[in-house]
Length: 284
Image 1: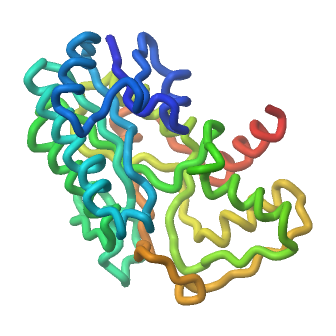
Image 2: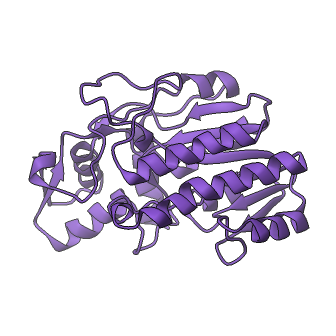
């Protein structure tokens, strides 16, 4: 199977390259997914059997001020890819986000793929539109929602939450972290392994893929500091104590039983994945 991987230099893209055979890695300099002519020229030259799209506009707060750019990359881009794949007989795997949820403020149970989405910001709304375009225009599609990604390929400019906490812990005696937003931090290596297994099946559709369990951002930070044996104090605060430009879901934990049934694989607890990641970045 020839696989064109869009967003190959990102955290998830980097780990996918380690898991997949015959990967044709594409970065932003190779393909602009918002331009149909570029998509057609680039993918037409490669003739992939499967296109994996990990590219996204994921600056959540900035999206509120740049909605046109967020919608172009997160909604229009996936539609262009979906139409090309359908025309050429290729399958498409598109990566989405837990931020398609959030409108249900009282939610306390993990969301399944059958639960109705309800985004609370531009980022989530644009990503939901991208999902819907993929589902509408490409018959052989996988849509994979994930959450709170962290991986070894994080850069300082985009980074990830775990590396940000480690950087701030080296600079400050205390960290104040939101404790009333619940999700599941997820190691990109685990998502990549699940995607590699999923695309070997004909089980097309919508799937949730995160590590197991639920956590607040405070708990993630506290566990990171504990595992690294750092002296920094982590203090829980509320969302109201840390106002941001964009609203975040108060609860966006995902139920991943569907993808586990489809692949026969089990997603490990977030604590085990985090410990593995920290060991890797400490030794690497």
